[in-house]
Length: 455
Image 1 (cartoon, rainbow, N blue to C red):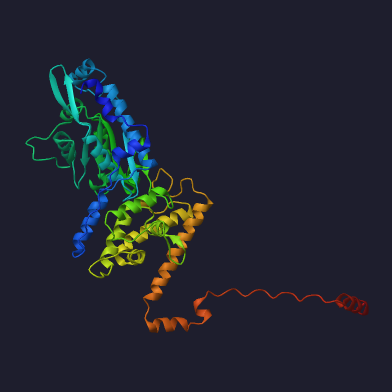
Image 2 (image 1 turned 90 degrees about the vertical axis):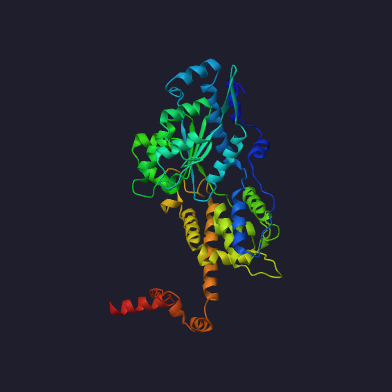
């Protein structure tokens, strides 16, 4: 591939169907060893992590990323002469002005899965650069995964070591890489896209925002388009930085939202996920069940808020709680509801109920559950119907919790509850003021006669 063709690696088809075919990842059905529950749960989590389905918001994000990379590549390598001149310069990226894009969202919504899909596609676009008789490698992207305590030197060594590196690089190096070496390497190998993930792992101290901001500014100065992921808690910390840093780090951002209830994308995700495990999970998103006569997709949305990680956690816990029969395990919606009420799901249940409360109240709550710079998840284009649905889900959750508490009572506790008087179980009401008696016919005449007698 010649220098002039480098930007074509980032060109995408305009048709949604062709774009989906390039990025979607649907694993083949796997056999789950139900004789070993731990092994089965591990297989479940590993298989679910490889699922990536396209929808409108993911298409918009991918097109935005690739459009920026394609524009930068077309400007940086228009011809061999320009490429050679920039390569000999001390600062080959000086006048190219690349930018950073922040991809944020709730924990477990699929940010890392999006990064994996981008990296998987771009790995296939690696090629060569031909300048006369000299042929060199061309890497479409470099990726960095942060780990706890990662330093700038770890990042530079990782970027210099290979296109897909961790925070500690691919192996020991005798000498730490310098910024100038990495800049030269990125330009020489035409790496116009840089992906950074798990930045919240760098530090959990009070100076985490300072360390992450310094790292992002340094990564942004390397030259390529920088795309980094962060959760809402880190986004809150970055939003409190001074104005010039915040403009550079958070000036370009997108929010990856959870699946919406009763949408084809939500139904499709549930079908693909459960189909990967043969007949283990007896769940049909279209089937109506329960006393409320709701579809199973709506019931699952009420227990997960449309977050893929929460769905997998529910399946994992329900698999551990399900009772085997005839050497097999069949997980039904009743098993999922029991898993939702279990202590193993308590932390996630609290988060989900807080998310529904945010939608119901129309305002933000916990910092970990909303963006400080964008609308609350579930409130975008919210109307009265969506608000009524959120109230209904919240009411059903409260009723389910009350039924679970009653089912856990002993016979003596139930008897004591039934013997309570209404005054003990119901709030007392304020006494109403007595109403004046109604006037009867003849009262006016009697009053007039009494008045005349007194006068």
